[in-house]
Length: 388
Image (cartoon, rainbow, N blue to C red; front, side, top):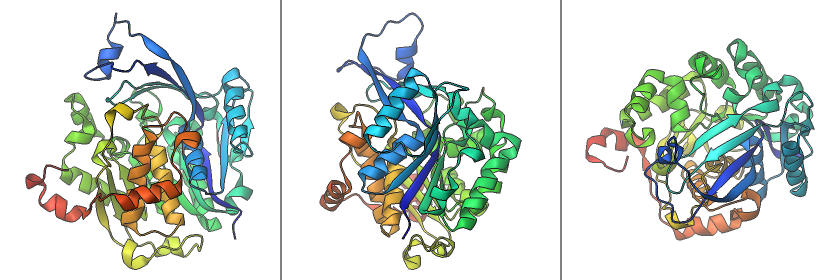
């Protein structure tokens, strides 16, 4: 019996979110950022952010025993973050450093349009192997880590520390899980050869859960740039055959389970042979259900008027997917839980306080009929299918 269901490590920050007035109508986020325009807002929300807080709070809300592993500064933002973590009983593994301030993000998220993040990595740039609590990791069932593009120590030297970390954790017998953030093209992380890093780390990665944009930018940077230059919504306009090739390539790089989060398009799943995951004996997946699958789960319908913000939706979705795996659910049910959690996150100011718990999500799942379809069939008939 492990002490923790999951250790969540890596990037931790405070998200500052301007509260747009109800009824504000914009075509896209650039309407808000247009030079010379003044947009009146209803104050500023501040919430814990980053994979550590988002996934950690969600998994605790889903009744899992979690240990959070990240860094905060000694500045006032760090003090606010620590007080919030202590309030929820999640500060045990959080260290404080004096060298840099706490990471923070300014999340520009007008109603009904995608977000823009202005991110200051702060002291998370100092996070490295010496800050990992290996005692907690060895006493956990799953180790979930993110976001390497914002953690300098883990992408420099061709991801040497990232590969070392995942190799060590995997050898401990803990299931490994990796999430990403979108590399900034103009930053140091945007100039890294991420394919080389993925090829090195994914053989030690049991579960890989990037967004569609993140995965495309790392694996198919040319195609990503073309989609971005066209001014189109990348999620809406990525060709189905490119999505298929993307998932298959990530499995070929060595990951056993790949979950790609595609916002309003839903979730895409590819799996290889999960026997290696079962051999660690911390989770038990039915191999006849999980092996060699390619699935698509539609996003749950969203009530636009109820949306508060989309910050953290991907992390919450991944947290639900991991929780379902810990609960030994089949892949289609795990994807449904992830889709429900991502949708519910949109209606939350605070994940821990506002997110429905696992029992409520289970009831919602049982009352709805979101189809799970085989992605192979969808891609074969993509020209005649307007849902993907």
